Length: 527
Image (cartoon, rainbow, N blue to C red; front, side):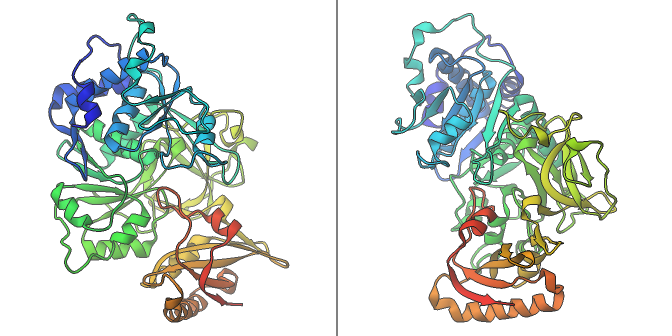
């Protein structure tokens, strides 16, 4: 048990009013007791379902005694995964709004911590470190909440509530920031769908190294494990060294991952043994290249379950089946939400015309886990009167109702009136075993408007000493693209770079590649 959780669990509080999250925690405490809920991957620390129940009760007391009222938005800036988990669940269970923030973010700047706190309109921040300069908001350090304003605690006030949930926000690097409030009912609906679709039971043990300030880890990790009564093993970040050994030591049965992680795990070393207990690895947060998925499955024997989700839907939207046909390149069928593909650029302009099978259109969703409004005054035009949300993705259904994502709307390259989807080019590039990652983005052209250019990361090429290998690989890729793609889809240039800018979950940030470029180790003009 963590230091904080152990401290909190010493004085249980009875007779609390209940909400959806608090009820689920209480039920799991009664039925599963001392069974482990959360386990730290690199320390001898864990928290049982009963320990979680007691810890959440006491956190609720601390929030109230610190004068943090029900309905308040509480920023969470906490590094330790177990400490964060308790604070996140307790904040929601007590009727507050948890706003998880990246604790590694620099304080100042447009993308800094102070700006992030302002975006989510946090009334107070709970952190595991002292208040940094530049933050102008009440700041409570873990362990001090119960010492502040305790004389103002109203013993008649409910310490648990059905209100509250989570508030997440985009950074605004590609436009006006999106503030996304998700009620605890919406979060639990998504968690229930993930648990049932993935056939999880109390015997399962999930490994999660994804950031806990992201919707994926919060719902697919924390809440889904709580829903299933299973154990969640948390790591601070992804570590490739001794990865499979750790999976065996913790008796992991499924892995919550993203394409960048799957790519790094796809080629086990000769001295590595793949544990037989692992039922599947789940991929989310970005499109998974077909070549990467095939290589991983062939080399590990572990099925890859590709999914599709977004914060506005409380994580999962579609998923390939656990038992059934998994289609490479597809993100599966809708799970717990409605999904349609429509023509045109916006559902708010009038009745949407749905496109036919294998025709590309705009992906829209609605359902119990999907938001019906953004926070603030922006982005209202993305949701129509019937609750259909524009995802910003282009995709198509096949004959079996499986969804394929073709591109983000903003990533489509308009080459002289012809639309070029970067993913089609990237899939062809990734067939080459020497390619670790690729991003195809638009380059301005005086005659055609925009043309595609490709940036590659190659295995074993990190600096100028790898130029010869880079030149050989790029020539091979250029020849393949020339023989498989029509001229309009071929990149005008191919550059080999050390790395591609990526977000917290490993998703390549195309806007950063487009706007600032990336220093090339090797460059080939293909015109």
